[in-house]
Length: 342
Image (cartoon, rainbow, N blue to C red; front, side, top):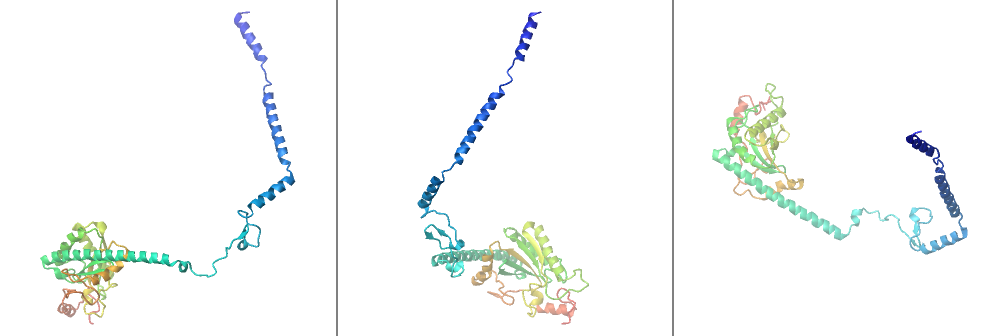
């Protein structure tokens, strides 16, 4: 038998005598630990009732005057905290919380409100001055062309309103096409408005007389909206950003003059260019009152109501009563009304 065979035989004999009972050691250790655990648990379960009662009594006496838990009672409204009862009954006066605020707090609130009002008033005054400057620029540019009487000015809670009377100078009867003189006026105003950061709202208005069924427009709503959009397109072509422009038709829903006023037929038939106010609602509400209290100075006069003006006399329409009489005699009224006999 070779030496290699002998070595392999010895190795195989060694493997046959390997120890396979080592797990018994780990098993015995686990049993020992479990037995110790059970002994400890058994010892803990044996409580001296007398000593425990003494410990409980001592703990109760030491904390009764400070942090004792709420003892049993008929309800939460009768709860006590140790020796000192807690009064948690609701307010018997039944007065609103606002009436119980101290006078000092009310004074602070009133002072803050007064300060805010003064701040809003100052902002409104500055905004009115800005609008007056814009009106002066427009008026000067139109005066250079001899067209200063073609527009009106007024300051409302919406901002500065530049009114274009939609007579034959701007639009023909029942038409949304801008006449030559109207295009000239718009081209003078557009560069000034283009320099402003404000939004420009173009609003079309008509008088209360209905349109004839033979016109291309269904009604005054349609016509007023078409006129507003015509002006918007003109301004867009002149360089005013489209995101600053809007066009809306109001028909006869927002008259400048009441229907019984002689100026209603022509004065209500208009297109308004509104330089929109960017201020808060509180400041906007102050604009008309502030404008009425500050003289226009050397600027153009402003309309302050439906039938009056402030400052010098302001021409609200370039159409004379003779022009209206001619239209009626020809069988038409402004906007080609069907009822022209009256």
